[in-house]
Each structure stands twice: as C-alpha cells, then as structure tokens.
Length: 212
Image 1: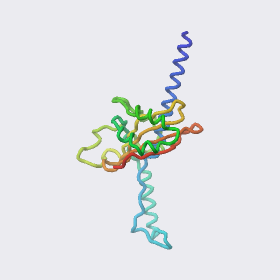
Image 2 (image 1 turned 120 degrees about the vertical axis):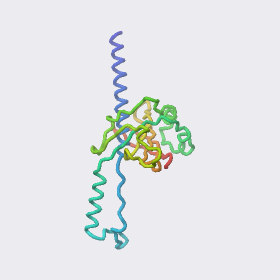
Image 3 (image 1 turned 135 degrees about the horizontal axis):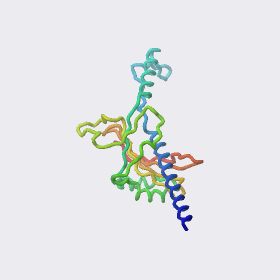
Image 4 (image 1 turned 90 degrees about the vertical axis):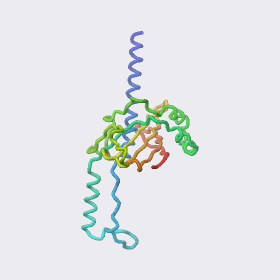
C-alpha cells in the first residue's frame, strides 16, 4: 500500500513538472515573437527612386542606416512581465471570436474562458522564460513603474501580460491570452491557439482582440 502511495505521488510530481515545462515553452515562444525592438523605417531623405524601386542616394547613406539599424537591434531592452488577473469576458465572448476559433479547439476554449485568470499572488517565474536576445532584461511589472502623468513607459521598453496557459487533457493543444504595449497609447492584445507537433509547440492561430 505504501509503495502504491509513493508511486502515485511520483506520477503526479512528474505530471506537474511536465505541465510547468510546457507552460514555459509556450511563454518563451510568444515572448520571443514579441520582445523585439521596432525595426527602423528607411528615411525618405536618404532614398531615390529608379525604375520603380527605391535606393540609397549615396554609399554613406547606406552605411549610416546600416549602423543605425545594427545599433537598434543590438541595444538591450527591458521587458516588464505581468499576469492577467482582471475580467476579459466581454472580449472573450464576442461573437466574431467564437466564429474564428480553429477547428478542434472549441471545447478547450470553453475551459479557457473559465480558467484563464491568475489569482492575486500567483506569479510567473521570469527566469523560466527563455530569451533569444541575451542582452535584454526581464523584470516583474508593478504599478510604481508607471507614472500616472506620463503616457510613455520610462522604466522599461515593453510590457507583456500573460493569462494562464490552458491545456487540453492530451497536452497537445493550448490557449493563452496575451497583451503587449510599448506605451499607454500603443498596445495590442489577442488569443494564441497553439498545437504541439513532434514535441514542438507551434502557433495554430492568433485572434486579435483590440488595438489601442
């Protein structure tokens, strides 16, 4: 009897560990997709048109832009991470969202709508999120990082908020709600539908909720 009890505990522990790993595999995938500096647009004054295409006017212009682009892409950024605790039911229940749910995710979405919110005090272990850009920093978000009289974020470059990652029983489908913003007036949110294929999580579909 004691051996059976230990075996059950061992099995449950392995399940929990696997769930945590898969959760952070998904968060890392989405983080890597979002946590990037904005690519600079080509400055018009450096360009000239030829045969319908645009070219740099001089070699110096080309070099200046290349150096500027490389600096932006290599400079470290600070990304703040938070959990979604507030109620998003008015968005999650909209008719167009229900119609766009990918085939095979219908039951999981109903489960997701009931379990997506983090409870107060629940956190994301930031060290478990894998970064593609090692020069960047991930910090926990708290209200003191934002000044009420400022629309821009002064203490960090980007804020990403995650809901709970909700899995199906087979652990091969998952749904997560994500909001990302670079200021109070520059934000986007949406729902990620993911499928696991050959041991790798891939985005099946993304449904946008709103843009600010």
